[in-house]
Image (cartoon, rainbow, N blue to C red; front, side, top):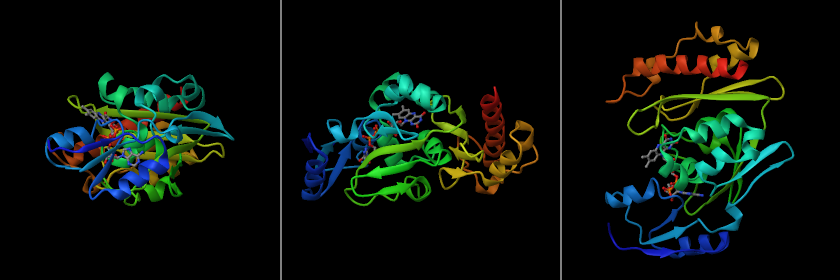
Length: 267
Ligand SMILES: Cc1cc2nc3c(=O)[nH]c(=O)nc-3n(C[C@H](O)[C@H](O)[C@H](O)COP(=O)(O)OP(=O)(O)OC[C@H]3O[C@@H](n4cnc5c(N)ncnc54)[C@H](O)[C@@H]3O)c2cc1C
């Protein structure tokens, strides 16, 4: 690990200033992805700007039909918050399925979506619920924010500040975890919104990271029943294939997880 200067700003503006002044700056949130990357020498920041103390990133509230979650909120805080449990219990359930207790206590929702790992859990909820991502500069719909594997619309130095989730009628998340890392081999978030629209987002399985399963959405919007998924073909050609599972295996997992999520949603 190379030497770096650690900064702990107390405001969003100061964090952006520190980043802009650095030849090679990186924001640090929970460090659950960044620190291992630095240890391996894959990231060599000169300045590390810690976002953990910024009041602008610390919030968890319900406002005008939205659950608003600050970027610095840890997975454990989402998992155990009575506000989340009341507004979107499926989101609390999802947070509780991330990694292990150590990862959940340090890792944050902002770090997770900024990193946009193709097997991360939160992107499925953000996309299925049609959440908006607020940053230090603008507001982006989930569809624009996620741009493929490890890729987002964030510009150099831009900070995710909060995620604004519309509160759905009902929602459920099911994932098949990699038994070693707990990352999703396939995770499916199904949300029924207030107007009856059903949205489905899949993580862990797609070659381009998180995606919406539009055929499933149409079928489930017509009739919300796990049986509606049976006839849908998930094309293995669009699925990831690696040492953990083939594309055909993942395509099957997507259907199985989707059916389980719909069954949970109806329970
Ligand atoms: C063993 C292990 C198991 C895991 N299992 C899972 C799992 O099952 N499911 C899952 O979803 N994830 C899993 N993770 C990842 C975990 O959820 C991380 O916490 C998360 O991906 C990164 O969040 P972080 O807060 O730790 O971010 P960091 O590691 O601090 O940062 C990650 C990246 O995001 C940037 N960043 C951080 N915050 C912001 C922000 N607010 N604005 C802009 N950029 C920002 C950083 O500069 C960095 O590039 C696992 C990690 C480990 C180590």
